[in-house]
Image 1 (cartoon, rainbow, N blue to C red):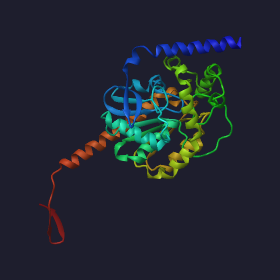
Image 2 (cartoon, rainbow, N blue to C red; image 1 turned 45 degrees about the vertical axis):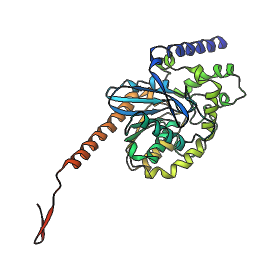
Image 3 (cartoon, rainbow, N blue to C red; image 1 turned 180 degrees about the horizontal axis):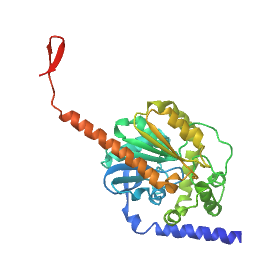
Image 4 (cartoon, rainbow, N blue to C red; image 1 turned 180 degrees about the vertical axis):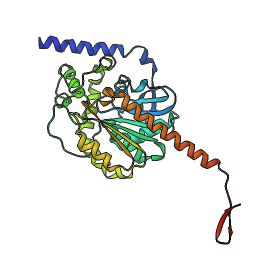
Length: 329
């Protein structure tokens, strides 16, 4: 009975992968930056928003969340290096800093000016690095369920920052068949306490996520997680762009208090929203809150743009000294 149930779950995911290769597949495009071929999805018009997924995931995660359905935004979702259909060249270490440089250049190549950057889980480290590396090129950040500080974790059924696989699945000695057996159950744990949405099941190509090349990228990012957070966290106080932080109150992957709450207290310009009864996949369970955070940053960006325009077109005045006073001439 257990084997039959697991096989049924796998067949459901296989069916979802097939659905993901339909009409939506035609919208995917590729761009090569710094000898790295990246898959991306560019959809909608309006305020530009760059979307960066977590460890082990890919574009279809955001595509199935409902976030990209919001009007008045141009969404540019990338497969990060080694995930989905993007390359991960072996000639460099793909730290958050290196990925930030790559996505800043990719965004510029695509004509994306000062985007709002949304990062989930491991992707939130890349988003932070983008704001630190080039604050003039980032309008603001929306950080979801991030792991921001080098706090060692106790052993857990799901690796820190890794979506959506267990430590057993991460080990290369496990056969592809066993990876497929374990994956559906670990996906449920990543979404817990929420149910796995049907839209995610239909759109997310789990067999693609279980390829050996993607699992190697998962291994690498899991191994460098603590060192990446350690390298970034001394610089958080320098972040000058507005930041919206959203995390689930029952996240079983990342401790919301130890990471999201602490980051909010450290940043000069941030808001924090804890979503009740929600786990790690907050962009699925509370997509409307993510969209609201993006819209708030877009409004702020518009206000600043108007202020800059008014300042640049205002007539310059010359001031004359008359007695003890200054008057405009």
